[in-house]
Image (cartoon, rainbow, N blue to C red; front, side):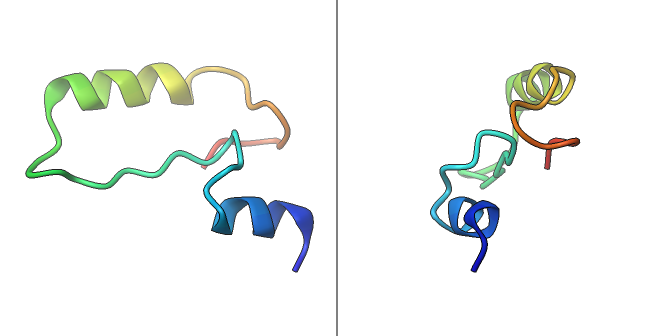
Amino acid sequence: MCLNCTRVKNKTHPDVIEISPKNSIGVDDIRNLNEKINTKPYEGDKRL
């Protein structure tokens, strides 16, 4: 397994954002996500 795949699997890759709903996803969660996705990725070409 490559380094990036290992980091994604271990949830340590800085360019991958995981959304896991608690009870539901709120407006503040979406705002926070929008802020994160609109920044330049650290290592890759895109954020996931």
